[in-house]
Each structure stands twice: as structure tokens, then as C-alpha cells.
Length: 337
Image 1 (cartoon, rainbow, N blue to C red):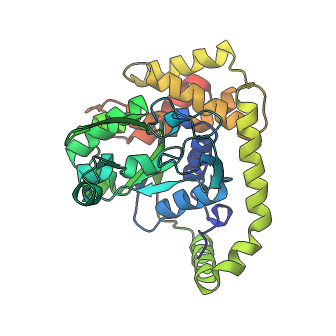
Image 2: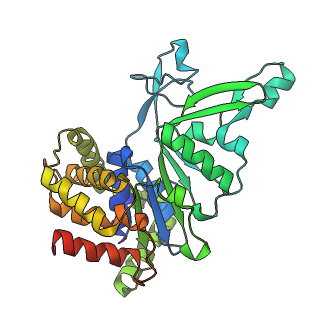
Image 3: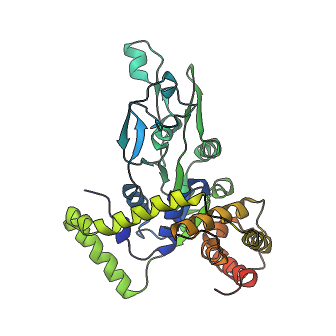
């Protein structure tokens, strides 16, 4: 059955906007979605990947390198092969119980035993290159895997040194995590690596709940027909994403907008400058999606909660949640929308 159409997802506007922004500009740094179970988190990730156009990859390359610019770190593409084919954008699930060997790759035991060859068996990070790495229940991920992901996410290269193997391969992906805050908090080191953080809740509006149930039921009864009915909307959104990618480099960010971003981060007391960088990149991607040539304060206002709510220090004297604190700072610094 085809993936549930992205354009058919009801409500959850902040989550959908964040995923679209990450699809336009992966340098934003990935998306974390926290909230209730059954609110469409994993559905939205798979729907976005299915929506995106296929990518050209070097034929036979286990890392799906682009034939136009094969990665220097790729041991396969270094051989000079350039035949290509089209593949869907990879979406790879990282299970909570995954071993380190499965994630980073390891010695191919079958070839080692039958042929006596030392060959590398690529792991999940190899499969996720140029696509999405999805971690459900990211807050329950084991610490050693968190450390590993931090290193790879920062460098875009997976380095394997084990069992007589010494190998590097490209591993650039959009990291998408989801989880339920009631089951534990995310490690601060990993939390800071996500560019955007969204909160999703179960709809309380009766009409919205009915529409969600109606669409899901129609999809499960006849997925082909349901997806075909959304085909026009899906193609239109795909064109919007492609146009935004082309426009992105020409979208300008005025100094006044950068100053507002800095003032907002100062007002919230965020550590470092990653908050400003993420705000700028996110607002620019949103402007590109909307067909604008210049980033405005309105764009900053829209993306500020997603870009900053997970970067706040705890304030024992302020019992309001991070979303409320960001909203208050936005109104004070940027003015009411």
C-alpha cells in the first residue's frame, strides 16, 4: 500500500511546516516531534519522503551517492563508476534495540567465512545517506548510540574501525526523532542537535477528530483510490518544495531580521549562537516555501517556537512551559503578530 499522503494529514500544522522546511534546507538540522501517541508523527515522516521526487544515485553504490557529485569519502564511487538510476528518498528506521554493528556497519561474516574476504556490510547509517533517519521514542535511545549519532550528524561521515576494517563512508541525512515526554527526557547533547522541535497534541475539536478518523478509514479501505484522490494536491506541494529549493540561495536575510533574531535569543537566554543560526535558516526556508524573496519578521515569528523551545535553560522561578516563554519573548521583542 502506498504511504499516506502528506496533504491528507489533518491539523498538526507546526509539525508539517517543520518537516517541509527540513526538506527544503537539510542544514536546518533535523526535526524532533514530541507529543501524544497516535498523532501522526511517523505517518508524517513517511508521507513526506514519499512526496519528494526520486533522487539519482550511482548504480550499485550502497550509500546512494549522487552521480553528479560523488562523495570523496565513498569507497565505492572512488572506483570511478558513474552509471546511475533513480531511487526513492531513503527513510530508515533506527530501532531502539539496534546494536552498534547494525547502525554503523560491520564485517560481512558470510563473505569472510565462505570466501575469506574482509568485506564491509553497510549499516543503517549507510542506507540513510541522502534521506531521513527516523528514531521513534528518541528519548529512550541508549547513550552509546546517542554519542555515535552526534558524531556522524556533525561530520556527515561514518568512520568504521573494527575487526580489521578501516573505512569511511558518507552519511548525510535529515535526523527526525519522535517521542512521548511522559516516558523520559532527551539527552541535552542530542536535543541541541535537532534544528527544530515541535509539540503535537491529540485534537480536542470534534470536527477535527472526525475528519482524522474518516480519512484514515478511507485510506485503509482503499489506499490506492485514496492516494489517487490526493494526487493533484501532492504534485502541487512537490512543485512548491522543488521551487523553494531553487529559490533558497537567492532569498535574502536583512540585517534588521538578524538583529531581531539575536535580540530574541538574548531575551530567552539561549546558549551559544546555534539558536540564531537555526532561526535564520528556518525563516529563510519558510520564505522560500512561501515564494518570498526577503525574510521578514513575520517569518521569524512563525518559526521561533520550533527553533527555540528546546534551547531554553530551566528557570525554577518560571513555571510556564518553554512554548509559553518563547511566545512571551516573541511578543516583547517582535511585537504582536
